[in-house]
Image 1 (cartoon, rainbow over the protein chains, first blue to last red):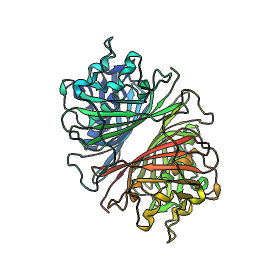
Image 2: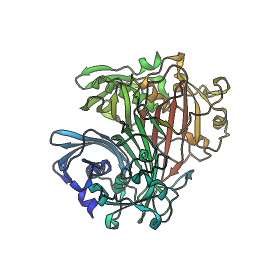
Image 3: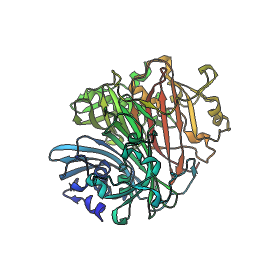
Image 4: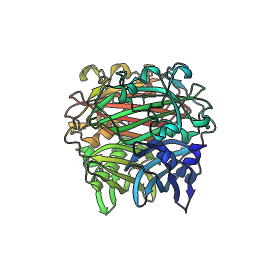
Length: 263
Length: 263
């Protein structure tokens, strides 16, 4: 239960929670952005009393370093079905993350008009995909999650990018820890950047903003994920994500805006 | 200059702005969501001292009715290039909109790695497109903007939807008022819902959340827009937008999450 333990929050007062950025979630000196968002969202879930994020947006203000943090939550509206809140994550007195989110109870799948015009990611069987464990052991983060890349998208790691700005693969937490809707916030920001496959001189892509929509709680088992980028322009790129569960349901969509420094 | 006048804001104190929801921007009893977002973003631009939204997210809490409003802005970070702020729009003491945004100066197009994998919307010449003026005169909003729909996407208005969850067309402000980056926030929420073309029993799609990314200031002239929906599931749908300028540049991307009540 590394993920749930590593994202645990403790209420301090009416609107403040305390947590800890663990050093196992680091990638290149910054805590993973989905991990930080999950901590903030957990505080917001507690504040509004609704268990599932429906749509959450995070703006990344400063790198998250392993340290104690606080999360201040303001509930903006509590309606019949949805609650909306804003949150700020602070390290000392410096804000590192700002979040705005709407929450609900997604335990019962809402019925109604239904239409799906795009298929789940087409992946080979899990055993034919490539575990994402860099040869040098990799950053601490890679030990916390279990990701298996589509073979066609895995060449970048050996200097052979596919040429398509795309990453596809399976995702689960280590030790097959069950994934709830907060875990989906980790899944949408866990894979290597799409542009690593794009044959562009880009070595890192700091996230400005990440938005995740959650459609449903995922069923148990591997998640299938696909991330694509269509526009690298003006010094920015978008990265669009889809997460599908073992029952072939779209459970989350994401989009992030990232900066494109020269590599 | 209807748009700039209708979205004008007046500073009241260190962190509060006053404005007015005009009755010309109404659609079915609610002020247009992009219009409300533009008012909030204008307050945030003044607060942070940076002229262009880069990424802004709005959560819609209550319908905006014609009335005086206030906008409270908190600047969360002012960096070397970007500033991030949160805002709350209030009618009386009730919040109607919550916004989180990052702002910059986009007057100089940032160079760097460039890759565009998707073309602009393919539209017939403007004169062959269909002005979006419903036969009954339509809601007040339709008098504020000038939209011309792709003929293939315009059949829904006469009960003949295309079958594809898509809306494409040209957009400009009335009297060819120049569009700045705040005007782009209007453009991304102005067209009829994509699902009107989807042959689903859906009569209205209230927005839960709208995120817009701005890549560049638009050049003068018609904007070309395309909105698509791929997933109507779990009681929600996403609507993805692209806005291109006359120089064939992607100037904005948007995604909103909307509710799908039965029609």
